[in-house]
Length: 313
Image (cartoon, rainbow, N blue to C red; front, side, top):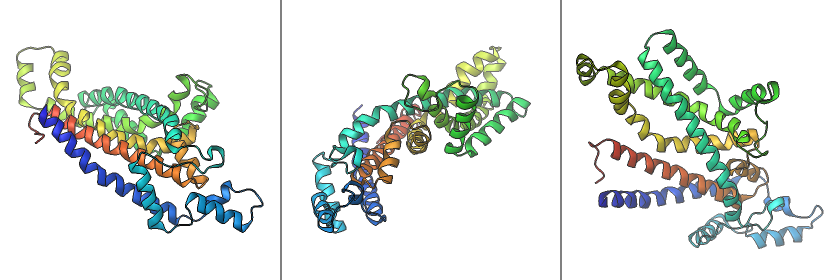
């Protein structure tokens, strides 16, 4: 346990410069983006002096390094600044993030559940029926699901399940489980394709090993050989990439939430970019970068825990 704690602490310390680098890149890109955020919040007929006063009030008149330095100073104090978007003017960015974060976490959790609920059984089915029509059908599914962009898949599912058959609501704002199923399905199918391929390859490798042959030679039922012995070893690579999948879902959530108007962090990022709300964009990217770092940390820890050959030291 002491090795695990020290390992986590080292990884978190290494993550700090990564997060700060992400904030610098985002801050620089927003600084160089054409457009003036003050124009979005100023009165329609504001004078040049009034615009300048607003720039000084929000610090947009300062050079890049001074603005970034003040941002880091506030960040170290736990202050992400205030929104400059018209609808949320002078609202703390941290408050906006805490409002939207539960929705994104809900979407990611259900999407991950869909991904592994589909990917693991399909991978096992494909491996146990190698080169059959079942195997080829599963491989076609993985190819199509992985190759199809999430925004295009979302639109197709929207047209099919919402517009055509009226099974699920078209937007993610009506409340209840039904409103999250369509965006979660869109988010989970692409990752399910990767999970299926990984599970298939791992299962094929395990069932060809000598200990599986020995178990079969002892007369054990095939079902017990596969699901009690082979699956326990074949699923290890899939378990270890759960943390890495968090990064996949963080990136996908931005697009999927926009397609379905799901009120999460991803939609907040897009709306904030459109309104040149730099403080909110910075806060969102910082939070998403933190998720990616934590996902990689979880992947490292799981890999070390499920594989005794790996040491945390």
